Length: 554
Image 1 (cartoon, rainbow, N blue to C red):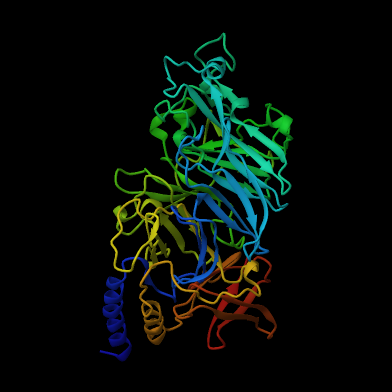
Image 2 (cartoon, one colour):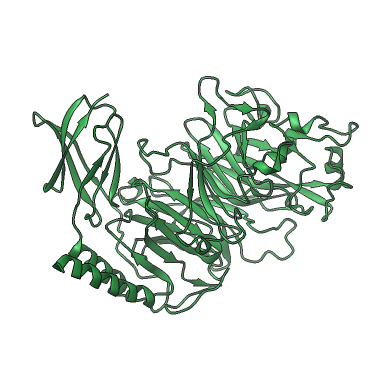
């Protein structure tokens, strides 16, 4: 038996014993395959936003008063500012309240100084769930807007067919707010309804031939006022489009944002010339008159365009990802689809009055599927090195998966209700609710010049030796084993390696010695855009040691 194999067996044995010692916080970690970054997390039942390194140590935090709670998301800007949602912890007697309710959106700088704040929580409207920061400094927000029983009936709601058990209905609206607190753009579901029950009421039409409109009599939420429960919002800066996840419809919708507010209330205007009608919807065709057998989305969360922190060379860049909460009776998945976007006609193409695709491009799940099951919350993030970060929200369980379905990082949010968990605690469902977990690359602009010295842990009585022991043992036995493919290549080159720790360096030379690329990477894999390289042979060197030859031909 060779020394390396002996060391590997020792590592597996030690790693197994170490993993058994931790019940919260960091559970397992392979630093040679995990993507290095900082993890942004905003746990429920407490007021603070945290930035953690891959060892689970706090490297930065934005604290708030104890009587606030997440409402539910936070985002970090390249300049280090944080925009977050929150609400008062006490909600008794609030006119509008349901799970995911918010109230306040605020911007804070890196040092936690308040820059601006916007609040919407009254007897007719309330912010909830998610926001989408824009490059111009404005923020898109989801809000519930109360409609009375009379308003619903006039709009075509057939209460004998689809009762309103609370005597009212809340539509989702999307507003854009600037830093001075002005609403500068608005979209309302109420302006884009259809119904086929009563020709004497508003919005009468044929549901099955009106896929760009919302059937006011479609109800999968037992007549509750929280009719839509929009739980995710995303913005595509390139396309100028807004995407909202509507889980009670088992769909997500895309809306044109090149409209004015006046145009968004109609069916014309904007680049699409659709006004505020739906440009695209996907997940459950039965919600607009299609076949229920074609359902692909099941109470989804975290719907977004795949572009955060990614190079355009990433294989799934620009596609759509989401966490598919209730796809199975006892397991969840995350999925990627390719939307049928036609940039020349500037539209999402329809096929026989329904929208494709008919299936997922990719499906992610836990190697033991039942270990990733959450009926709500949760997130998915495709990482720059090809790995995938998944969060099963009701269990506060996050893990990183390689393309070969190997788990290379696991973390259990160490909260036990309103209290921090203690290392050794066994947490149950809903003890440590975590809406999302997002990893931000170490070279993100927000971290330039910042002090990211570890400040301790979220858990009490942490195991201080756990992560250092893992890193020391892995680095002792690992090797580069550099792989480059495809070879020959034409557009995208994938580079893989075994050793690397937190960061490795790559240099690429042509055969006359000219340096073509000089870069660093983490996580065992990098996708390199070579579409601008000339045909010929190149030399790839890792950390000035191991080299490979690659041929570029087109």
